Length: 175
Image (tube, rainbow, N blue to C red):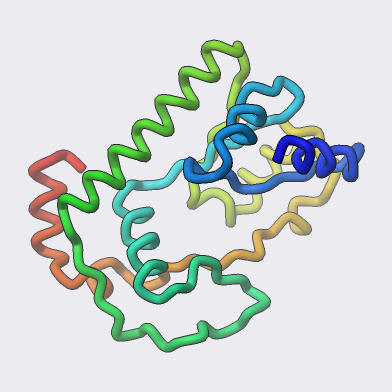
């Protein structure tokens, strides 16, 4: 995996290359990328409940990626209801917190500054323009528009099977 990462960056000199990394991805490659001073790290932040619901939807439908070029979804999921399961949500939230703590510890240890951007900002022109400049890109931000579409496009009230229970739980746990 480290050979792949190095090959990717060698293949794109003077350009910006990137990829998503998840906690479940190869640990050796993750550690290499996190510790490398030559690789900028962009941490995409997102609300825990949104990531939980999106993840649950992907598990239920088997659709983990939804690209603009794909057009309509493979299946009509307009009546899909996702159950909120507090114990599953807590495992999800705890893993996300641990990952953020890992990033912060790595930042401090390596004396790097990771760039953080909110999930909602990725589709907005100005935050992407600022991010591109910070990374040294000369590309016009209009060409950097993401090709991914959101998994969840309807309000959570319409999607979560037990929305009221979820609201009460989140209020109780400051979630």
